[in-house]
Image (cartoon, rainbow, N blue to C red; front, side):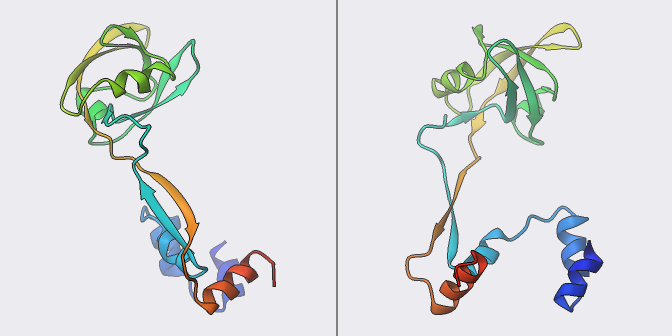
Length: 160
């Protein structure tokens, strides 16, 4: 892939591939979008709970599974693990629908009891909730694009 990109571009993309494809650096989306007159706007959703378990859930109303535990965050520090089946939060049934509602009633710094099944065994963890840090991201046009941004945007979308 790198060779194909370099053949089309006529220049080396070794640094790009080392950082963003083979490495773990995050793409500078804002920089690339700015070239075509777009901006990234990150906000904390007003409907999102202020407290977080530091986990991501999947599943349905019958079984809720911890799909991801964010390193260094509340669930990770308490010992929750990917694949744990979430059963209850402070004695209340935990589902994809109820967990956000239950977290809206809590504040960062509070400790909650989390019940999970791990490999068929019921386990209890005390999780100290953290402040929610994940943001909603929107891509929006800049208020006054330059002529170059407008031209690149139109070309990018095939409108020119």
